[in-house]
Amino acid sequence: MAITTAVELIKNISDTFEITDSLDDIIASASSSESSSVSPSSSASVSPSPSLGYADYTCGDENTLPGDDTNLETNYTAGDVTDVETINNVRVDQTGTGEFIIHQFKTFVSENSATITSVGQSTQATSTSTVYLQIYNRDTTTWDAIDSDNTTNINADFTLSGVIAELTNYKDASNIISCRVYQEAV
Image (cartoon, rainbow, N blue to C red; front, side, top):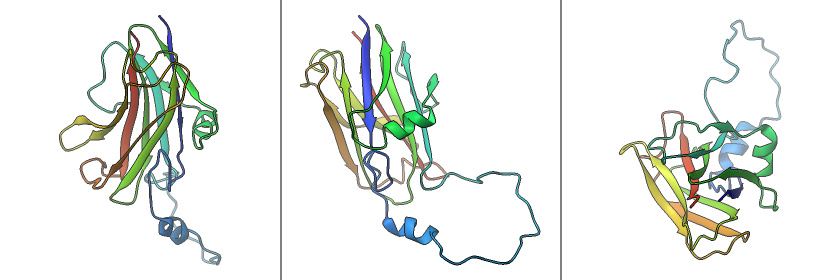
């Protein structure tokens, strides 16, 4: 049986892939004044570290559920990332047969708490195979459950959401968190 899981994520950074982040971060980075000084040094780095707006999204079909947050086999295109930034019935598909169908999302978060939300659809009823939303715990190096759905019919929207009150164990050194949505195609 071929299963298509379509995930639509909102990624604004007051987000719905919902990284509820502070508006102060956005305001603090905006400046209306220009500087006339020239920097004598150059940087070989385009961006020294991830920041607000960073998105590293991948998807894939795997025989076994990955134990870490290594990127999956298919990178989202820039258009795919744009497609999942708002809930608008535009989704990114991933198919699979007898495998785990996974969408993984790495996002910069400057705050210590977040609300994470994913809206998706599947061609397999979640009563047949539950859909899960998880976040990667860097302290225990395991995936922690945020939410799941086992009551939605095929090709109908399901919403997975949860509040992570303390992100300390979920952020890497660059303030990136990793979340995934998956379903086993049975």
